[in-house]
Length: 537
Image 1 (tube, rainbow, N blue to C red):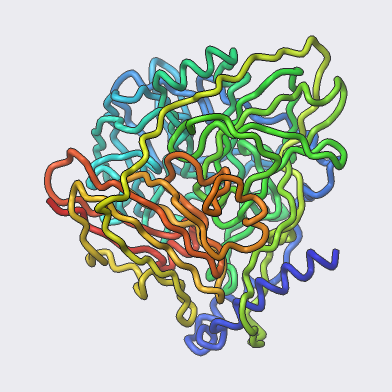
Image 2: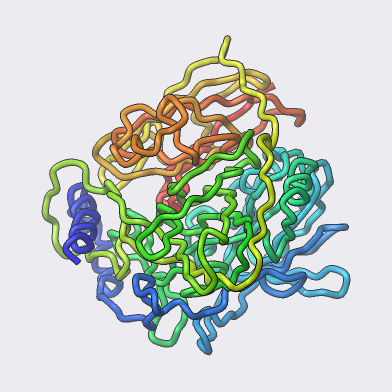
């Protein structure tokens, strides 16, 4: 309990330290005062293991999270709707709705083959602007879902592009500036699965079937009011630091539970939270069980890697295999987020009372449960895991340009290279076909930032000056953890840390391309921790 109170204090101290007085002087304080009152929600405390009784929602071939094999043009409607996230408690929810072959889908899991063409019309049936970003996919910039492409209520946007990305677990979500956090939190997001020969070979070898033993698993944290409806009302601290929920959803299921057989399961984990970082582990009683990482953001890594824990930041994906046969029939295994230091108060904290604290009862860095697995009876099935999963060509470093990307904190604003987002301004230019090594540095005074690159995937080269909790996981040379392997589009930078990445800016799109770099803490993104960059030629 003391540790939980200290975590809340640290988050509040950083907020006070960086300028609550500035916000109060601006007059915003009165406008948000009502949001600072602590509230009680429907009790689904994820720390209490006995609460985990709700059957995990498993995607089928229609309905919410329905697996949709795209076979032709689609019309996707962004529209207000309703879902019962808590049992018997309908909540307003924003949905992507579409139909194909006589079936209706809400927030469908889109599945396509690498090399196929997506043709999709987005129709905005909301009362505010929106747009879709295809997170991790390489597309022309005009198809990427840049906020400049946002469409007003009642308008449409036509997407048409070839799926160039290798097989992997990608996703799509809203990207309307100043509205991304609210719209994504309230529902506008889902998976985009890309198949290729490596993916099919792996699932065939391990006898994995999508929707049965190959499970997309999005982890999110939400707050609910007394009526069981989603609550999103950030106060001053939460608008700056990031919104935290206190009910943990796995595939939109609170306190989720799944009955499994003594065999290997594939979990395609997506951190779909606004701001919460997870330190994932499988725990039976107090014993940690091993799992195998087979992929990250941009698909399969080169070879399987054993692990007992891994950090996953907002926007990141972790593709893992878990052998449920490590436990006996009737035993329970929990997918947990272990406690960690959130590092949100580096520096001397001032005291500026009156701006409110986090309204979440679950502090960042707390230890809690996500999903309960109960092992059923049956013969243990063991399929031999291949030693090689895919081939990843290393981006050559010779001749690569060097670029410094500095994260910073000024007043109430988190910045990139001293800039706040300007829709019409390009922070820098990159020549098409060149390679660059970026050193992304985060100051000690601040908080962790998951940095997401639009337009291109990258490879992580090195972590420097990492905190102890990251150094303990650095098993792959130059400070890299298992979450850094393979092709990436999002990387977590801790306070005081610098991370080097390499990017190949080759593409076949005509003309200049304008993409973005931003923090995937969605409140940071909406507040302007985001810049444009232009690929010329």
